[in-house]
Length: 313
Image (tube, rainbow, N blue to C red; front, side, top):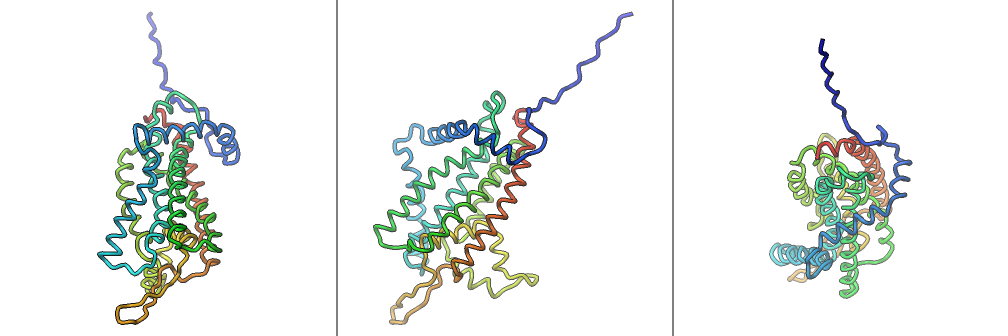
């Protein structure tokens, strides 16, 4: 009697990672092999500017182009009342550009490095973190342009308000890192995520006071409520609002100003939200804490999904 062989059971191949994220040991592991991360950042920067004549100078030209376009539209055509509008615009645009470019690169970070994912073991968090590192290089270059412009034009207020900058930067890094891991993991399974992200970022930009006055928004929303909740509080749910407010208060610093009309009348212009530096620091601290909680959740999701990246790619 001839006996047949039983078919081999299908095995699910997974990485040797633990099933649950342990934050502290994982951070130690990431820091221990940080040279891999730095090499990935250098690779991303080289790929971004390969065969480019101007190289990294494009990072400074991008916000300058935005500045020229928005300055023409809002200052000359729409008659914007914001004094020293270029500094106001650049101070918020520096933060937004880092946020948007980080997410735009992170969403494809795993997919574009599929050869590494399927062949080499390394902490998968390096892929979205490398995108943040690349955008951080651009952030430094753009901040230098902003500071040089302020020094040349003698505008802005580099004083006590600068104490808000480290807290604003920390909150920006926390929210960007949290969302970068989320979109990178989702795009492996749902490739529509990269297209949806472009639409979301466009909408998100106009819900953030980068090109329009946050003081104007404050005056409009403070008087209205929805279900007993002030609309201003609803507006501040957007974490990028607080981050941009922190950058604007640190570099621009002009909360309100006066301008003389043609008839000789003096008009007071509310530029930034009329809140104290302490109040804004507390708001940024709360946003940073909330974004750290969001980072923990998205990191857990990314860690769990990363075990199947090789099979899904």
